[in-house]
Image (cartoon, rainbow, N blue to C red; front, side, top):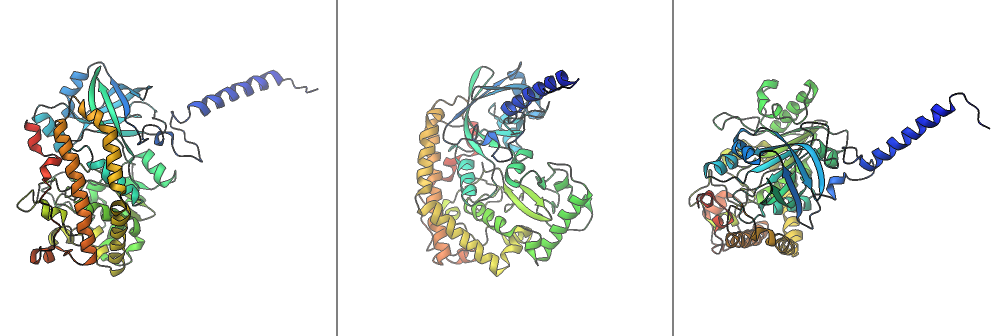
Length: 464
């Protein structure tokens, strides 16, 4: 028989520990704890892409929140996701021009950020932050959805997304796209718990040189890269900063690029980026709208912000702006002017290597063959439209009518299919694949006269 003067205390302690263990097992994911051998719980819940989810936002003064949305200040709210309640969640409006123009033209359909751990230690089954994308300048509701699916197909670390029907202030608010924000949960999911650093390089002003946003090496001083380090998702120390600067230095040299760049990932990223003709991006005049991941001195680029993709960003476009023939056939080998290309070393210096240039073409062939010529794209879009159209029809805050949505969805579908034909021709050599080549010969261009780019969404829609 067991004899011990502390036997009662030991038994009670054991019972308490067992109860605590059970509670942690049941609720651990919701509190941010993850099983070592499984994906985080939010992947199969909110980001199940086979259905439209429900998000209800509750706060004391929703109208007051909307009136002050331009301040981009976090407010506490309660969020109900597919029937599950989460308290003390931070919420704020998001966006640059989209936020400003939404307010300017008298709309209240702002894109939103939900930060589960802003006010207290909390998460949605391991997710710390998500965005609710309002489909600003996207009458098709499909630009980000399609682009992220293409990125996933090409094995790029990509934010998860799903459609959600949002209710706020006790009213239906509309169909939004929930997008996993690249922060702690994202990097843990993609790179493991011992992950590297994550940055979102962005300019303070377009009038500045912004060399760091373009990932140009200038010198060894940390202050020269403020647009990167100021926008770090995790506080970088001196060693982190030195690694990144050294990587940019190697990138600028054009030699031994594999010691500073995850070349394979970056080439696959640019394959999709160039296909979707996203001019509000690293390859555009602004040079931003991406995340930069660094681990052990190796750089990767993470996709972000596609509401102005598919040639619907007018800044810097040549005349005529809405020339669908030009953008359906947009050259894959020089996807920007020489001035821009020379100032975008992450693309330009890789393309100067014959090996990487050839691999880039191999990935384009893979994308066109597997994603478009196989029929996958048309099936994907058809299934998506069948899923979301009942919600688009009743969307009370939409930026467009249902008929304009239909036109937008058909236009983006046609654009992509014709773009795939043009890329195939550029790979085969029957269509010029450079700006200079296309200036000399456009006779072989794919006919895109049936495509009217503004049908996918334009600022003029906000004025109606």
